[in-house]
Length: 295
Image 1 (tube, one colour):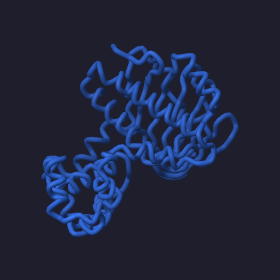
Image 2 (spheres, helix red, strand yellow; image 1 turned 60 degrees about the horizontal axis):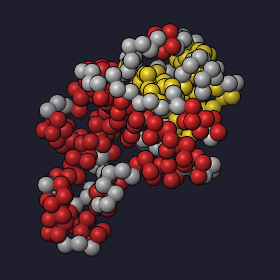
Image 3 (cartoon, rainbow, N blue to C red; image 1 turned 60 degrees about the vertical axis):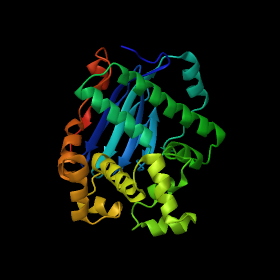
Image 4 (spheres, one colour; image 1 turned 135 degrees about the vertical axis):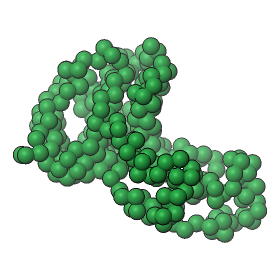
C-alpha cells in the first residue's frame, strides 16, 4: 500500500458524545492526536491543563501526553491519530508548538479527509490512504506555518483553509458567503456591476450551467455538510441555506436521489466506527476509556 514517507494517518473517527459522557485520562505512547471539535460543550484536560471545548477549534495532543475529555452537552468531534515519520517534520512541530486550542474554522479540507476515509471504509482503494496522509500533512504544515507567522492571529489560516473554491472567480465566493440570503440574478448583477446576460454567459462558459443552478448546487453541498457534521434539524438546515423546508427537501431529493433525512442516516452509519487505514494499527492504541453518562 502506498503511504506518505513523512506522515501517516492511522485512524480517523467522527464521534458524537452524549451529555455527561467523555473519555477517562489516558495517553498514546507512539501516536499524535488531533481532536477537531465540531460543536457542543465540554472540557479537555491535557497534561493537567484544562481547556474549554470551542466549536471549530483543534486540540493537538503530543505523544505520551495525558489527556481526558468531558462533555456537558451533546457534542460532535473528528478524531485523528497519526505518526510523524520524518525527523525533520517532527522537529519542526516541536520547535513550533501549537497553541491549545487552535481555531481552524469550518475546515473543509479536514472534513474532506473524513469523507475520503468513509469511501475507503466502504470500498478500500489503495490510493486513498496516501491521499489522506498527504492531505492531513498539508493541513498540519499550514497550521504550523500560520502559527509561525503570527502567534496572535488566526485569520490568515482561516482564509487559507476556506478560500479554496475558485478564488479566481469572485462571484462564486460571493454566492458561497451568502447562501442564507434570498439571492437573485439581479442581486448578483448589482453586486458586480455586470449585465445579467453577461453573468449567465460567464457561468455557461466556466461551469456549463446557469448562475442560479450553480447556487442551488452550492446550497445542496453546504446542506450535505450540515447533515454530516451537525445536529441541526432539516428545517434549520433549510433556513441556513436560504430555502423553505419543503422546497429544500424536494430539491435535495431531485439532486441526490434520497431525502435529506435518509442521507443523514446513511452518513451516520460510520459515526463512532473505527476507520483504520492500516491493519497493523493496534486495537489497544485506538481504544479510549469512556466515562459513563451515569456520572
